[in-house]
Image 1: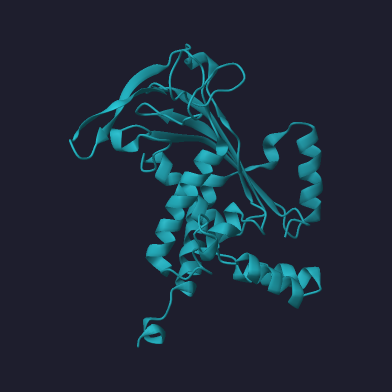
Image 2 (image 1 turned 180 degrees about the vertical axis):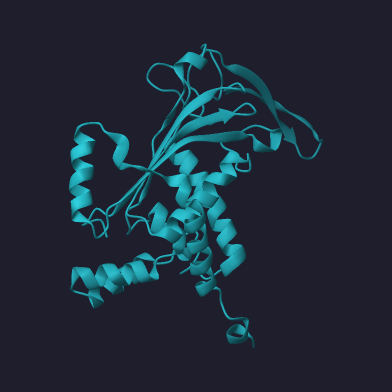
Length: 283
């Protein structure tokens, strides 16, 4: 699948914290400071792991697909539970025993892999979608964190449990983070799925981090640039792309926003072909 370069989508933008954000680094063992600090980079500045953004996006897309396609694990899997993977470890072993040809094995794996894993990857399939860790924009960050108090509630007395007071750190609202992502060798329906997922972040519908029941974690993605190159079947265009890439000439790229409607339509057509026939499942 990755042996031939076909296409590339580059996405750049800004992620804005609409409310305070808490992505915890775990309980601190320091004698002073917050009990639950946020994740920071080596310079002590706030950081949003790319995996956190990608995981939240994946979860939202899986929920959409379950609503459309049902609970067939070969269409929509649950990455948190191995028993609900589209290909379990034992099934993978059976496939390897069945196919001694790498090409045939790869085709069999792809055919049995759930739809979201085609784009986001799985233990047996590399991801086509990579998100860099989101670093704070230095000209918008002034070194401020907020400290908030929390307390565990005794369910019997419905009052604060003794000795359960703690504090946690949050990133203030209005903090800006650099967003950069890349997709390579994606099918048009996969790109449509990604566009729909990113739109959920653009409209503040996917929260990040912890404390969401407290109102934390509302973020907004502001996409500033989407660059697209498609060289499949055109070796001369790939050569021109490589030449211009070395010379730092971006003219070879196209504006990906011109293709969004087409990609979404391809997704709709693809999902329509996968929707179970109610007559076939009727008892």
